Length: 478
Image 1 (cartoon, one colour):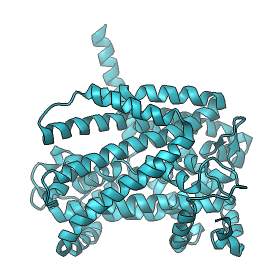
Image 2 (cartoon, rainbow, N blue to C red; image 1 turned 90 degrees about the vertical axis):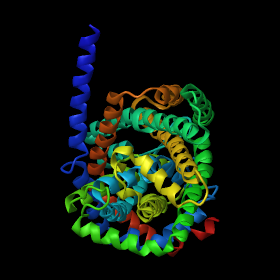
Image 3 (spheres, rainbow, N blue to C red; image 1 turned 120 degrees about the vertical axis):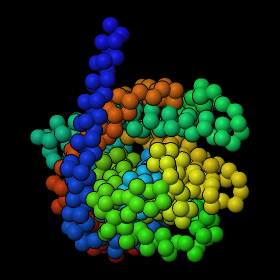
């Protein structure tokens, strides 16, 4: 009987893995996500690129809010909650994976996904605020399920329900179990490589359970408060560490940029221990890792932006479009440049050693202090993964509220917290593949809604910028 069950689980895992490869392959999500981003960018007349300074000014003012406006947390904390789920292992592991599989040119195509993803995130956040609802207990809930239901009408409610189901399942996998398992693995590896002893993974699991529970049970306001502190702190520390390396290797930075641009259009020949990568591989892995990193079009981030205390939907849309810029253009670029100037990506056996290993070795080789790179990368991975758990708890909770009502919020947070130590101590390939599959499937209903509701976004955008007070980012609010 046990052999039959094992055989069945193996077959099921292989089937899910095939479906996962199809959904995340070059013929489904990659062209859909990138294509919709291009359409939205053109329709908005490149607004995300033109209004980038305005967006940063709005982010700075968004640390406070007008007392007469509605919402749960400040616009800045809503952005930080979104970034908490976005800035994660993709910024460290994803970049290394893109370079190892697609060559240095893959970094350019990551930038491309971020550039067009800004328009996608702008539309997502704008629609999230426009069509959000208030629950009987005062929670502001929004996201794709709500702008599908309220924006497209009753005939589309089935699609909203599909998104909410996909989002709920994905929150336990991508947003919880995979992240806590990554934290445990990296902390245990750090204790062995730096201190020379094997830390019991159960200790890490207990600590994660206590820390996560202390934050998650408090709901979106506590999560927003923690994310508003943790995300800027960890991002700044990681970026500063990377910039220090780049300053010490300033003479190699121009060559690294030149290599990125050259390889983006010609591919990368075999060099050192690097096996080489064709142009198609540079595009494929660059776009795929870029989308994985900034999640533009996935439909997760607007759930967080819907909680913002804000008057006009477009104001939060401006903050939403900063997601891909900060995540990919800033953080991912730092990781990529450090990897390239270190030269470690060309070392033999690096592809087999692991993506996180490449980033850690690259930081270590360029840091003047022993083990400093390992500390920085491991700490970054741990904090990024933990913040992802916080952000995805909000996403899963809002999906559950849509499906079962506001009274399901607290039970969901309790269950979500209980899953934390389970994920920390287990590694089941089927769970990982299912989570990845449902995470990808979330994008399809969301992309349909974004295209159909584009006229609403354009109308709201014209309304916002037609009023001089709006265009000046509501300075009178602060």
